[in-house]
Amino acid sequence: QVQLVESGGGLVQTGGSLRLSCVVSGGTFSRYAMAWFRQAPGKEREFVSAISWSGANEYYADSVKDRFTISRSNDENTVHLQMDSLKHEDAAVYYCAADVYGSDYESDFIGAYDYWGQGTQVTVSS
Figure 1 (spheres, one colour):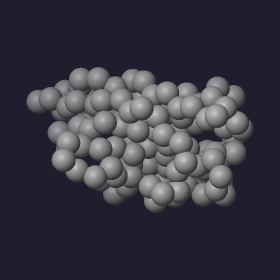
Figure 2 (spheres, one colour):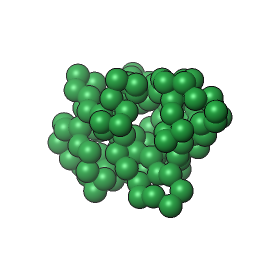
Figure 3 (cartoon, helix red, strand yellow):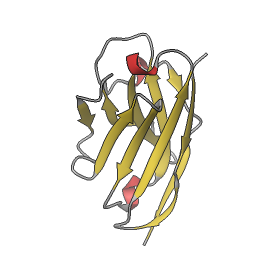
Figure 4 (tube, one colour):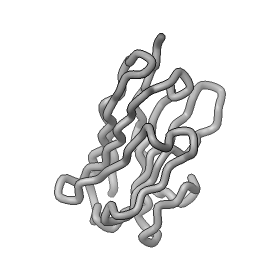
């Protein structure tokens, strides 16, 4: 059974930074493409960023490009999302997701991901 546990959310001022972490247990982490999605109140869950098995390839939504950085440590079974220059519109619940059965591809398709964390809240204030 694959389990994902996110941490690192909280309250931050506009322009500030947060670093989210997701620890994965079960299976072979180094063979999972990983991603972050987010969901704001009243909105659908949307793609934020994804990373390939080795971490060599990254993919970002246009809305976060050049502000967010995804990374992973296969030794620690962990994926991170460094969020800088945060804006009000970044406020959401952030979810970590694992593509356990797919190929080595950093997909932005929500249906590609098989396991999800419980989410961590990010609040951005002025």
